[in-house]
Length: 298
Image (cartoon, rainbow, N blue to C red; front, side):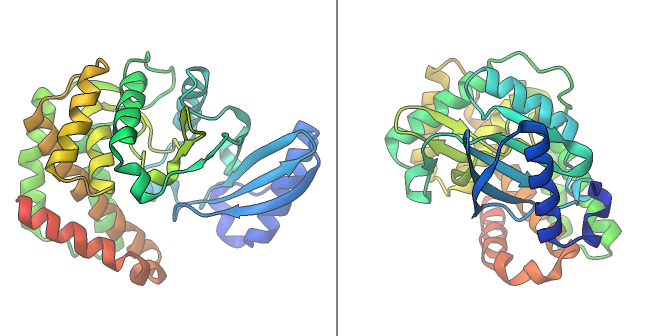
């Protein structure tokens, strides 16, 4: 079995074959169908139909260090979220090999339109409040927005390519100070965009916990607002529902977190492009939107 650091030397097909063999050996499940899932740029995932029901297999893209991903911490987050009914159950995890198998949550992912519906803003706000109220899982790593930005900036510096204007770094430092001084910390997902939200019509389960951490709770809300282009009115609705569900977040701190979430998304895009220039075209539109948003708010 190939370890994560050596995945580049293997084809995706061979890694998938190895993972399926391991799955059958460890879980005694026979795979009847294998369907690729659309999703992020970091990993590859499949929905597997087995003789014991549907499950999800994910293979890591093998760039954990560059993108600030801690697979051991991710596993701790997943197990805690599953116990609370907020995430899928882990069936098999081999972090060193980049293999994760979970139950397949009932229902399907949200569309961008679903993510901004008033009813769903209420539901996701309650989901965030429930997550943030959980005890911090043992083994979950600690992260601040300031630290996350510094890690991405270092990745860019090491690549020798950093097109981000220096003035944005200066603005980020000032916004981070607000979070350092005022933001409450909690168990956070940090990547709850619509494709990660699985809805069966009554309950929400969120997948992809690789960026979960003990972090500023308001950043979870901000990441969601930025990812889905919430305007001021809808952002206020999201924040209001979160407070009603027991969460705590002041509007000025939320606004600072939104700017920083957009900046972090920009740095992430630049880091992905530096690692894989072939992604430049697919990420160009999102990059332009983020730059315009940062300039307008700054």
